[in-house]
Image 1 (cartoon, rainbow, N blue to C red):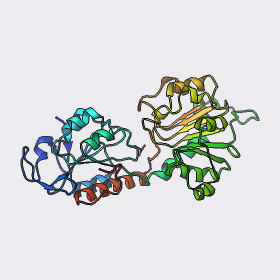
Image 2: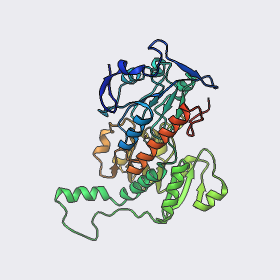
Image 3: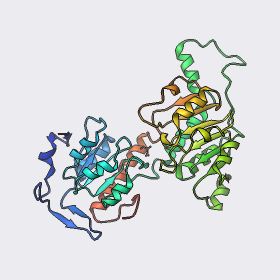
Amino acid sequence: MVTLYTASAVISMRQHVWTMGGSPDRPRVINREDGQHMAKGKPVVVVTRRLPRDIETRMMELFEARLNASDAAMSAKQIVDACEGAQVLVPTVTDRLNAGLFDELPFSLKLIANFGVGVNHIDLEAAAARKIVVTNTPGVLTDDTADMAACLLLAAPRRLVEGERLIRSGNWNGWAPTFMIGHRISAKRLGIIGMGRIGQALARRVQGFGMTVHYHNRRRLHEDIERELEATYWDDLDQMLAHMDFISINCPHTKETHHLLNADRLALLKPHAFVVNTARGEIIDEAALAQMLAEGKIAGAGLDVYEREPAIEPALLELDNVVLAPHLGSATREGRIAMGEKVIVNIKSFVDDHRPPDRVYQI
Ligand code: DGY
């Protein structure tokens, strides 16, 4: 049995479940117009990872919050057990909510209020089939994630991390005209794959670096936005890849974007090209990328996300021309608090019988 923690005491799951009237077999419920049922009183909210302290405190005030004091990622069984009698689950990208898990989740569960914008770890079809509402946290992490993409866009070609490693090794012999030469980014072409909020925020940033912005997106942007961003649209991704100096991935991971940059597409890149990924690791074939970087067929990469996090393709760890960040895109104090606030608003709206603002799909 999973042990969870409330504000004051460690209590066991089963003791804590039925605090809202009713019994384990028959909870008291109210009917919602949309056919969903919420138990009366404070909703039971299961949170799978530690959240910023202010957010946890607020959640404990507003909800019957079941917090994960250990912060260890929970197995599918632990999540299912923890959700017994709960109305709301707050997962993160480290949880795998697949179809099998939805078969096991209790019928009391009505809302998945994801802490994060990406929802590729949630089987949305399975959630919709169970009529479970899913929300996420868009908007509030746009700037932080675009900043991280910009960091990697600078750090990789300017060999920042490689240089830092050299200094720490004690082997730096001082400045020399031919020492540690990198690549200029100004006046270079950046191809952004996925021109949503984060892609556009990155485009605004790199205008300041003097890069020219190109993009590929499912839908072409409105001409006013294209003009503002001075962005050139490429309908054909392969064509864009073949003409860019830098590529940044900013699209969501879906069935359609899984291994979008596979070995064949990576082979289209110029040998001096750099790839930056702050979206999801599964969008690139990581093994193919590592091989091409090792063979010098691509100049370098800046990665914040990985195919099998926290595992990393071992070949990548051997390479100096890759900057590796541990999924830090939204990791600012301000960003994480704003994400938590969005989660709370989504839960509160739902339990108060309003439409949560950040629903991922309509039921
Ligand atoms: C997001 O919000 O999707 C971040 O990658 C963390 O999950």
